[in-house]
Image 1: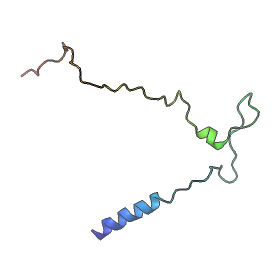
Image 2: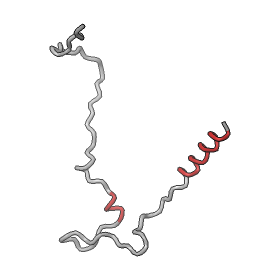
Image 3: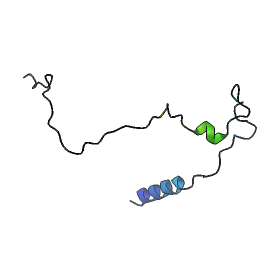
Image 4: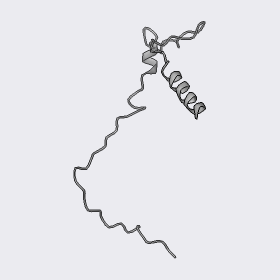
Length: 80
C-alpha cells in the first residue's frame, strides 16, 4: 500500500514540474529556414500552431428534445 502511495506521489510530482518557458532549439541547432517568399523564419510558437485545416472545429448540433426514430429496414433481429 505504501509503495502504491509513493508511486502515485512521485508521478504527480513529476507531472507538476513541467516548464512553461518559451521553446528554443537545442544547443548547436537552429530553427528551420524561412519558407520561400517569407522575409524571416517562423518562430517556435508559429511552428507549433495547429493549422485550422489540420484540426477543424467540431460542429455538433445538440438536440433540445427527443425525436421519434425513423424505421430502419436493416435493424433485423438476430438469426437463431
